[in-house]
Length: 164
Image 1 (cartoon, rainbow, N blue to C red):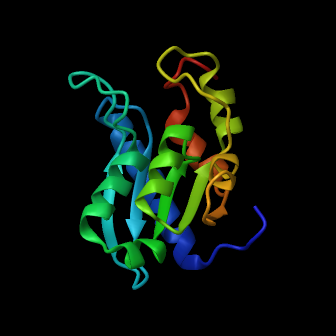
Image 2: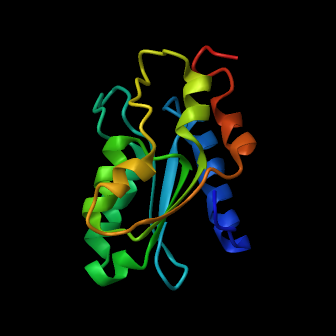
């Protein structure tokens, strides 16, 4: 992480970490995200919902939150919005964030650290592709801050994936 997060950034990030614990308690993969507009209002939040009964692997928290925000905000407002996530957005979610026009991403747990927690668990295959690399291929810049608060974010994953 190159920039310093504000106290407000840390508050929103901790909220996603708390949400990821609630998502896990509900029997889902422990991931959560929210989108905050330029005025500091939470306009969308979501937990991972990719497990049965729906069984839709595209229902990641970041994708759901980005899509909800895109229905509520104008393109100009999205460009000023921040998506906060309990974990680094995967390649699919990074693409959704890019196409929705969100201008800033702040995440807690890195893809690398997550891979160490999940091992080769079949329910969480990964590209091991940092979101910054996905964003770098686009035509517009997305400010990206993270990882931050990794130990706090890792707590929701402890024992979930069968890894230590």
